[in-house]
Length: 488
Image 1 (cartoon, rainbow, N blue to C red):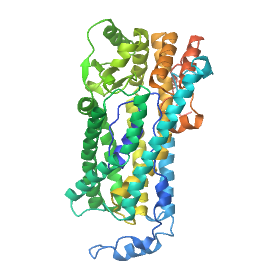
Image 2 (cartoon, rainbow, N blue to C red):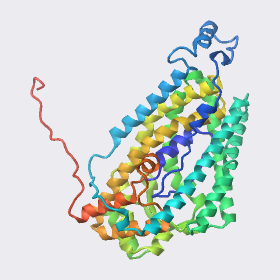
Image 3 (cartoon, helix red, strand yellow):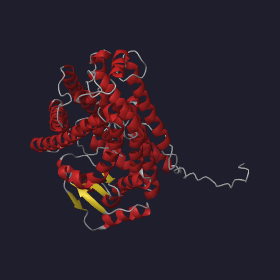
Image 4 (cartoon, one colour):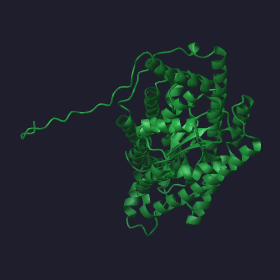
């Protein structure tokens, strides 16, 4: 699965939205601006805005300002946002424990990367990955520096009108696209040099412009909603925002395949033939209802190969990269499709939406408390909200990727059982790793922090375990034992 959970959280907690195609086997870039907390000025509690004469509780508000910096749980205190952040992290960890797969798993056989990949290939992939990671981190630091500067200078604070809030949101979104753009261009230049990127600079620029326009529209809408919630609910605006974030996640999941994907790619129904018949047969064998099978023109941007299943209900469809269709054998294509069907079979997309629903209330509260601390106001401006969103989403994203990796392990085991083609699975992983220039065995800490998928060596180890006779654990079913009248 893609890093959808983190994307949803970032969508509803930041005034900008990025659209990115799904890229498997690659860790997310680090984007959490934790350094902003160190750089931001420590503000005293009496820097809160003066309560207007119309406030029905002026004395109580005054007492709150005077003691906010000293009392545990006061909106502006340091302990308050630390407690709120701890609660959000605890909610995320609890959600991971509750939602992680407990059946359909297959323990991987330990394997050595040197048995499947040449040492030169591994070294080349690591050099490339480390360079991209450093550039991505530099871009994230530039974004953090911009938001910190705007916060310290008091820019983009709560506007006097909803129209002003929309303009501020769009402006901040555009700035957050422009500031890290040089680092993104360097990352693209490196991808071109190794043959991973295929799109022209003009095409890349058009994609950046589309993403900026789409992000600006989302940011403007989100800023208006946030301003309206603050006006209507006051300091409790985060409650409605937490509920709204779940609705946004559902809407993006439903509308993405129909409205967003066609903005960036062309989709054509897979032509009638043996492969289409086999893909649909796999779907039936997996117990998955699929409306359509599409081929997407991924080769216009990259040489990487992939496939995915997205959408819910009537919008559900299998999408296969044209690079996968052109460069891989039918057995390997079946292996990839079977893996993606597993996510539907086990309802992993609804599972991720449930994760968002469980975590969103605590996360939004932590964002509200921290943003008030940074901005010195219970109605914080956009830079404070963006910084707070990044700080809160960073640890939650790390935890959510635990759930993602567990679901990917189960999908691998399901694909092996569905196709019974361990050799094709291993051959695909080897070839895809080389084609995507991925590190097959990254450091454990890097995989734990940023990896949405298990390391390639672990995935090959799952296939080796299946080839050796191992099978996914069966689904546990509780036996119903009738209770006696006494309840024993």
